[in-house]
Length: 132
Image (cartoon, rainbow, N blue to C red):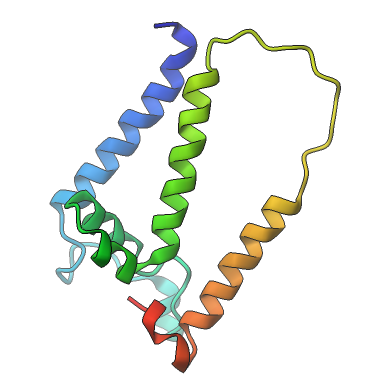
């Protein structure tokens, strides 16, 4: 193992520790975690509302409950896992010289649009299935 993979392994260990804490400390019990400030003050569900419950359900292997709590968090975790696997696989490999290029903004705009649509839909009466 090369030392270039140590940051990826450290990120994995930190993520595993955070998931372990959420897996042990049940967010379904009141008073365990602070209430979302946006929900508390406006009654509007943010895109992250239900995220801790979703991670808790995933830590216990309950995918249907995780999807019911916050489907966006489950999708984001899948994307993050893919990025982490790519990072780990490419760590330590010699880099080919590349010409300077701009980072495409389309994936960022698509993600921002998805989060916005998810937030609006989950706060409308017909989007109650997306509410935690």
